[in-house]
Length: 125
Image (cartoon, rainbow, N blue to C red; front, side, top):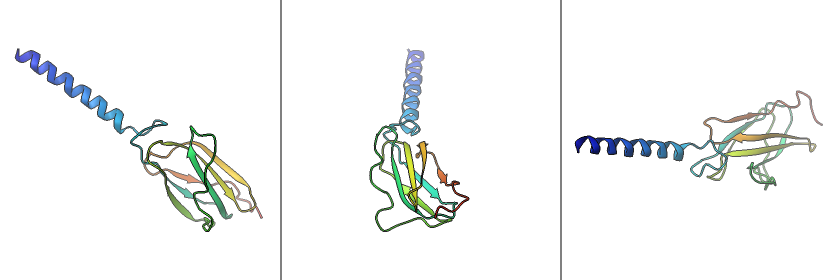
């Protein structure tokens, strides 16, 4: 009887650990507990006018996350906190002059995600 109770307890603990690990793993494309965030580091000599980030599961870019009155200066950095939920994002960066660069399937729930923009060691103007 004691052996059966101990075995039952082990099974319950093991299944709880698996459920907890699955719940806290934000790496999947639709991790419901994910807190997606990324830092954009403009390592170019060009101004970034627009930043779009949308879940990879969506087909459109959505709204400019910088808004109408903000840009990222050359050598500037900006952190973007995205809506909780999905972790896998596509990111589109548009420089002054309408030249664009994209990063697809970025895991925005991974700790310390930094997107560096190496494009244009050249000036776009």
